[in-house]
Image 1: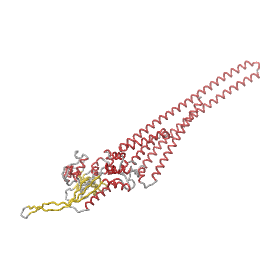
Image 2 (image 1 turned 30 degrees about the horizontal axis):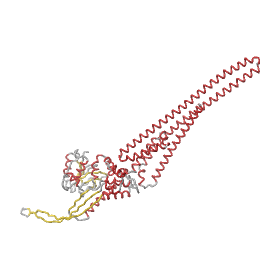
Image 3 (image 1 turned 180 degrees about the vertical axis):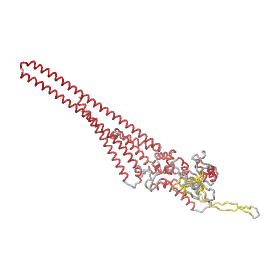
Image 4 (image 1 turned 120 degrees about the horizontal axis):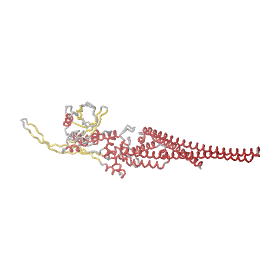
Length: 570
């Protein structure tokens, strides 16, 4: 029975070795196959922007996955080596047992032959002492046989103990391997949960995608024995790497990929450059409306949709299009045109003219120190330009969005995603640039009504300073004394000068600096705006009341048009 049990252990050890080897081989083949598919997908069309979502992470995939597979192979080889050692120990024990059994058999045979030979010799040579010789021979046989039997019995017991020890060692090894597998599985689960939490912190809106990914991974783990074997061998690191890459891929290929569109995808375009191009196109149309007719008085009013609303509609429409869904993490000529079309469907510019007859009173001096008032009737042409926009809800209705698509819009436009929009639209990541984010969100507003009415004026005034004050108030900077509330440019400049927070036009400003202008070079400030950034000797600004609208503009560092800078103590 001991021999049979020992053989069973050997078979079990061989099966364990085979399973581990097969699991290792399967994981290697799976990795090679996955990599080949990824490379085929990546190089299928080197100029395809639709593949950029995977290309942009190629370097990270190569580095991280290779490290994970290296750890998997290292742990796998160690597990296989331990199994082989246990197998050889069991095999050696069995061989020793067999050899001892064979030795025992030979000893018995030798004793028997020796005993018989002695009896035969005594009978032939000394018949007279037959009985005593025979008695002596039997006694010798009995004594010798007992000793040989006792020795063989001890050998059998020793072999049995060795076999039992081997069996126990193998069972302990199996238990250890099982515990290792359970610990590795728990570690993989914890790592997956950590990856999920990180993705949620990065963008709350990907909850559905994360849950779907985790569910898919659990299904794969539950249904694939090879993957379980890999985890038991120490390959959980590679599994976690795959989980993280799947999460990233799902995010980039979903509607939330728009948050990553601020980077160049190899086409020379980013979301920022396309937004700036559309802003310029919008300003050009405003100027064309002004130049299309002759007028005496211009009145502008209204505002256009903020960019995050436009991009939310764009992302959902393009990514979930049932006929031609596309990722929105990259930008190309086709997607740029789609974005322009959506922008102009959401925004519109209308104009009209009206002639008004008015009585004008003029005062003159009659030459004798007397003021003479003269009333004349004049006809003036008024040009009214109105900018209007549709809401996100109206666009959802226009495009026939279903409940799921509307849910995506809600997630994209949550307040906690504002920093992600700032990064995608304007490349703004620092909290000190909050006022720039607010100012840029107002680009396209015309007439300034929200700003001068907020300040307290009952009718239109020159509103550039009101605009800066309004933006500062939105950030809480007026209440905290970081930026003053001012309607006259000179008041704002003096506020900063009196506090020693002033720099001349040679200064290279940072984002959020308040920039003052002197159009006539007479030493007095005439206009004010907010610095968006300063790069390569160029100052980028956001200004209210630039052509009676909010616009972005650029100036050279040290330009004579720049009066100086107010430097807020953010």
